[in-house]
Length: 277
Image (cartoon, rainbow, N blue to C red):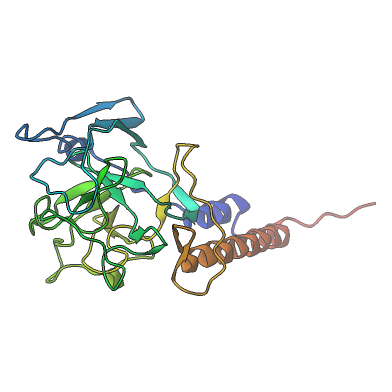
C-alpha cells in the first residue's frame, strides 16, 4: 500500500470540520419586505460580504396591548454575513434580540424576566393574537413560532435570519410528512436541508434557537457564558446555553488534537529513513 502523505491526511482531517453551507441567498434576502398596510418599515442593503437589514421593528400586522407596554418604532440595524462561519464553540443566546423576521420584528430567546419559560407553563407570558408583545422599551417581539399572522403553515417558509447569518424557517419542510420538532434538530435548533444549514422554528421548547451555530460578527453581541450544567439547555442569568454543544466542542478539540498527533506519526513513519555518519 502506498504511504499516505502528510498533505493528504491533513486535508482530509480539516474537512471533517468544514461546513460549506451559506447564509441568506439573494432570493431569500429579497423576501425581507413589508406590505405597506401597517406602520412597519424595512430596507435591505448589501455589500459583497454582508446584508444589512434596517427596520422600525413595528409588526406588519394588527397587534393588541396585552401587557402594560405599547409597540413603538425602533431603530433595528442588523448586519449579517452572506457566508457565515461555523462556530467551533456554539454561542449562548442572550436576552433580547437574537434574530430578526422577514418583516423586521425582533425574535427573542424563550426566556422571560426571572429566566423562566416565557411561552409555556406557570411562567408563561401573555401574547397578542399574532403571537407577540412589546417590552417596556416598546420593542415588539416574538419568543415563539409566530404561527398566527406571519407563518401560516406554508411549506419551506422563510421566517427570518439569526444574528450569525443563518436563515430561520417554519417547521413545514419539504421531505418530511409532519412538522419538524426539536427532537428532529441539532442542539442549536437547526438542520441541513439540501446542503444548506437552517434554523427551524417549532412549537416546542426552545421554539426558535437553542444556541448560535455560527460566529456573531458584531463584537458588542456577547454569546459567551459559563455553562456548567449537564442539562441540555441550561438557563444562566438570562442566557440560554446548550451545554451539550459546548461539551461536544471541547471533545471535538480534543479529538482534533489527537488526529493531528496521529498525522504527525503517520508522516514520520512514511518518511524515508536516513543514515547519519
